Image (cartoon, rainbow, N blue to C red; front, side, top):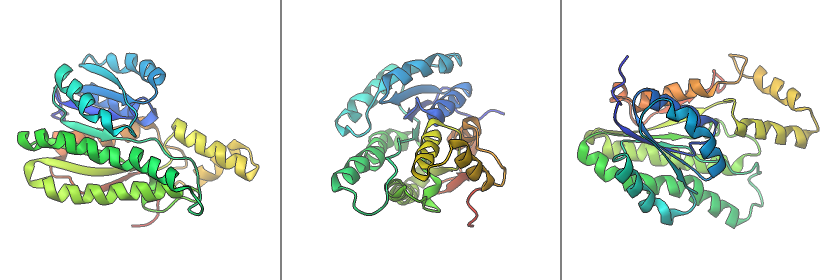
Length: 261
């Protein structure tokens, strides 16, 4: 099936992580050029060979999302080296596990810049060209905490919900110009972030990690954690020409984990 994104340029933020890597590879296999951005330069270098096998244009960008001053320069480099950005996949690192009470304002502020304001600023930078071309995709990965808040992840729950409100508002403003904006919600996808959260929960509760994982798995109707490639397939569809009438949505990829409608 031709997804209609061959030759398009995709910017994947936090692209060296488990979800970002899978998404970048999936988009590249459909013929998209990839700008891979991540703050971890070592991880970035390790991911490039796998994505490079797809044979499309590929560039790596060391990029700390909380530094808003580098956005213009980084987007200009992408435009110069592989083309104007057609697709943005927004992934941000998660904050540390925290309750809602007694968190320092500076911690909230730092993660707001990294997880929310950076995403908005990147979109503002690439949207004028998308609107002029009458084609673009803004896809934002959040967390199941935006539907059912996750205990001890208060900062993540709150800030990712801000992105849902922004994306839904943005979708209405740009829909008539051929640009879509959608939210994708991962459940328990097998990534380094999920392993970290399982290990932290095991430490807090004095249990084995295997016990925590077994309890998590038992709550998922599919009785397993998801594979990053399964998540990437949904994101790639939303990036495609076939999804041209899908906008303003919140799509779950969670194996049936969240029970609410």
